[in-house]
Structures are given as C-alpha cells and as structure tokens.
Length: 114
Image 1 (cartoon, helix red, strand yellow):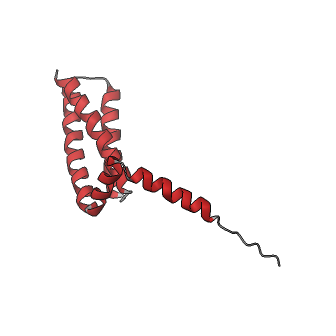
Image 2 (tube, helix red, strand yellow):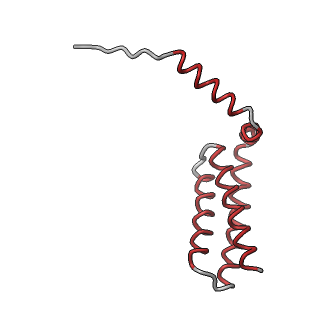
Image 3 (tube, rainbow, N blue to C red):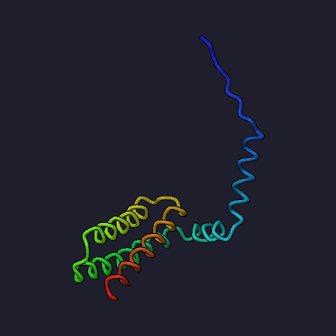
C-alpha cells in the first residue's frame, strides 16, 4: 500500500493571510467586523426591515399596475435577504444582500409612487 504525503507551502498560506488582512483593513472590512459582534441582532433586524420594505414595495407595485418583472425582482431580493438571515449565512453575505435588497426596494417604491 502506497501512502502519499501532501506538504503545504507556508509561503502561500502567509501570502493569503497578508492579503486578507489588507482587505480587512478597509472601511468595509471594519464594518463587517463590527457587525459580526452582534450577529444575531443583525440577522433579526435585516429580516424585519427587509420584509417590511419588500411588503411596501410589493404593495406600491401592485397598486400602480406596474410590470410583473418589478414584483418578481422585489420578491426575489426580499426572499434572498430573508433566506440568508434564516440560514445564518456569513455576516458579509447578510449585509450585502440586505443592502442590495434595500436599495432596489426603495427605488421600486419611489418609481411607483412618483
């Protein structure tokens, strides 16, 4: 029986760690680290606020007789936000999906009110 030994390159690990610390030193990385402290609070707030905004956007879309793709976009982004929260996805995913969902839903609300 033949055994193979796989050696890890320390230089590759060190370079990957240094690149990740450089990326984490940005303002966005610092924000994610701060949000990671209260992870379950973040999840509950993104589900609550995202669902409320999604419901308001869907109501505006339906009352304005807008195209069905707007309703589909609103529902898909709101469900993606809720799914990331319920599935306890990484903090970066939850924050990114919440941001995208909020921006798009607010734009849909404004487009259908005006």
